[in-house]
Image (cartoon, rainbow, N blue to C red):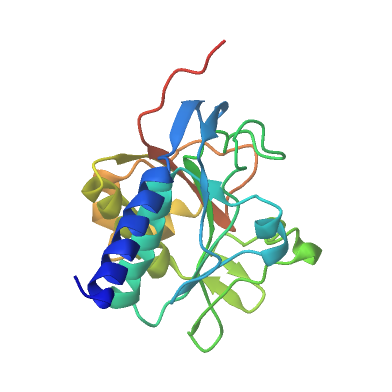
Length: 231
């Protein structure tokens, strides 16, 4: 056997060994009373998306179930092909081990992700919503009843396309979306988009206003089987 072949086989075996050591995520309980093992962080950025802040990302607030990571990343890749002119930003997800995740009431078992709303500037260009310490990393932003904040307008078409991509990719992975929390007062504008009928028929939008408004972000809970939480 020549040296090149031996080296190639060595790295192949090494690759398989590393994969074998990487354990799959295991979630327990519910989004509001749960935990997770072997959670993984979402990537800091990709071709058409970024995280809400590097500081909080590095502090460990963007961990999810590995299946959720795959769904989120693949959905962004789909959008990069179908809507190459659009950019997206995700926000809080959860901690490495799950459990209480202040100030959220959920985000406890790796199955919850907050996404900042995609927005358009006055020129109609897709831009990232500004998220920094001054506006509590985006969560203090308040859009009006038309989805306008300052010089920015919520890009409802991009938001709808993202929800559809998430739903389809989730189904491709053999799972489902449990619910999407988005301000009920802004939902009619979302349902007027090209993907409005699909959303009505396939995605559960929470009809009740949450304890926070959810206008600057939309909260997505994924329906992935979890083990009971030990008492």
